[in-house]
Image (cartoon, rainbow, N blue to C red):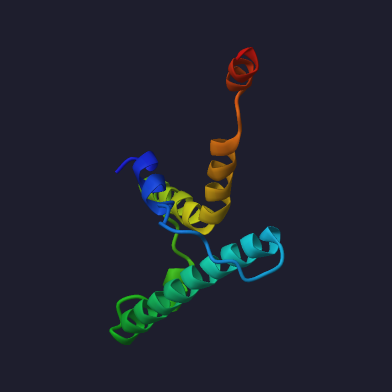
Length: 117
């Protein structure tokens, strides 16, 4: 999977209008980012805890070994791709707002054509 495909999938746009609960769009955006991060963190923490407990209980890997692990270059590259996908998911609301603004933004060519009519 290419990085473009991964980012496109991570920032898929839902249909319908985004619900609004707070007075300002800035507060809504900050809340959406924070809630996205919270959701990601909860799932990750639960899975990490499960793995660490299973590995330690079976005597396969201790938590100290996990803490001292250093990834290879390939593993670091894989983590880097995951990090980019993660940020795309977390900042999806900001990206979608930017896309909506750019869709409404007239280019100088469009303005010139309209003025010429």
